[in-house]
Length: 275
Image 1 (cartoon, rainbow, N blue to C red):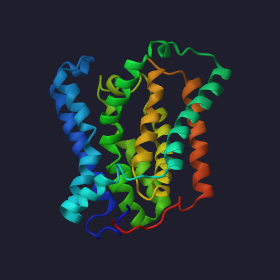
Image 2 (cartoon, one colour):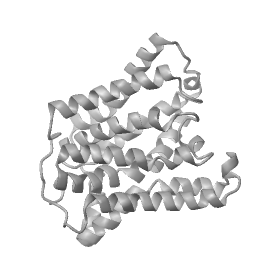
Image 3 (cartoon, rainbow, N blue to C red):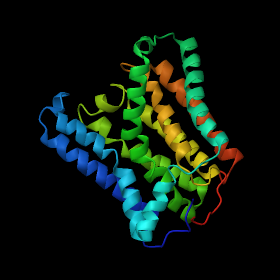
Image 4 (cartoon, rainbow, N blue to C red):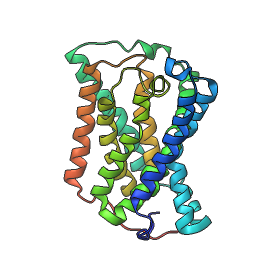
């Protein structure tokens, strides 16, 4: 459950800076010293390190939770992963991103048809492997931080709406090295996807995940599931996604995020005491 306001010494910016430091320093060092990374052929050690670096936000959240609340503070943050959020919020966490991607794809296809040939290669085995690897390297490595510790502290200090936008913006910027370091993007996102195109998804998605987290009384299951479903589009795209797919889908996500901000100024936020 959501904690009382943070002590003044540990503002949300402490979390953001630590999350960036963990990830950017950890991944950046190995990519700079690996001569093959710049040529798009990173070593196995570099690839593994890059996936470990994704855990920067969750590690930052756990470190600061331990500092402010000791072992119980860190454990309380971890417990939010399996805290029951309610069937409705889990259902919405899957339906919103998958539905928005489907509607965006339909709109884009009507504007300019394109192919989803990559989907023909998706069998049960590949799907399960994708879900397992993506869950570990993405949502679990990030959401304890962004929608866990960071969102909680930012909401206590700035209010839920500002907190949602702040964490979404920080989350977007945190991904920037993937678009600057040669070869790194091909391990994570479709090659050729620009940072602006990517950020259009993360900003809107971050706001909706904040809303789901607040509505679920701090449970992180909806944010993790939303994050996972958001990445399911990667299964359908094997190369640079066409603009007729990216921008209509981005517009659908943006409309949903704007609707949430307008209709629920407090995003369903209430202060909860720890268990």
